[in-house]
Length: 437
Image (cartoon, rainbow, N blue to C red; front, side):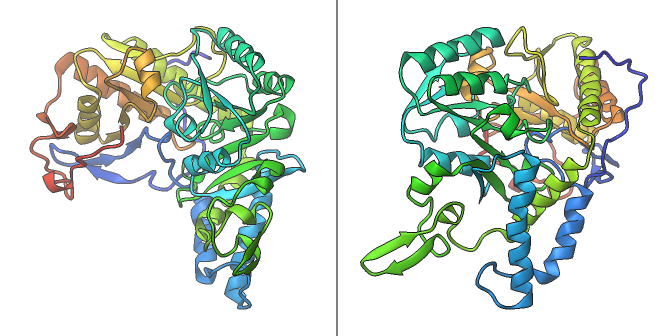
């Protein structure tokens, strides 16, 4: 990764919604919000909000409607499959099924897999919990050794599917997908890539990589309107029981027999999220128009600036999985000696207007294996990030280590908040008593 001097000015790569939002500070006054929570949900690209504004007057139920609005919505919905398919380089035999998010996509595929599934122990819960017959492989301290362990397991006993993350949602480290696809196919298995964190940061071409299935979410792809996609080979999807039973998933219904449709309709019963799907397609089209190498350079420069700055702060440790990982996306997770992650996050938000994520990121086994079962702080970057944002975060962390917080922060029911909370709309009654960890 290229080392970038702290004096380098790196502007946002693209305009995103909320980029100029002013947020209140607990000590009084306001500042421009610095968003380091892209890995949880990325703000909408301007092209996405423009597309929604254009479509909203014609929003209607899709399929079978004869009205003009319904026809417009139907066209937008079905055209979105082409946008998504083209964006991820899908093969001719791969179909796009619209879902709610990555988790929904993985659960859908889990209902269709005709055999064992091999997974790593470092996966997000969405790629650990849905599989009915999973064989879990412990990741090693290097990528090369981890790949070897997967190869051994795939050769040890027949498996239908190898399910791996494209990029870790905790460390951002990227696995060698093309190599893993070759290993899976050599053993007679297929490969599924959890692309929730990879697709927003790197161009993915399923055909050239040899990937059979890809799952990803719109809300991480600058289309935060509640849609996701499962893209993959149709034979398993056509043979599986419908993910939901209901209208739209059928060809013919009689009281004594139901003839189900083929995928994708087979797994899209009910009235779909037309606006979410249109937003997802708009994001795919917008991202496809960007220079992917330039996007990567922008992200790598900001990550270098952030990691170098964190390494220079005493008591800060940046978490890594592998000693030999060659690529990472814009996710940097760290701990600060003497401070719980939630305390750091509360301080950054309340006193500096900086949004980060804290906890165990729905990857409890991964955090446990790196010795951080109590959680960590995650700063994630995106197209709207800048070097000014990074310098603000580093400055706030240096101040925390050197001087401590300027406000009292208290932990109640497992959640850290400033005490008292003076920001409008964030009183004690609004505190989240059951956070997703």
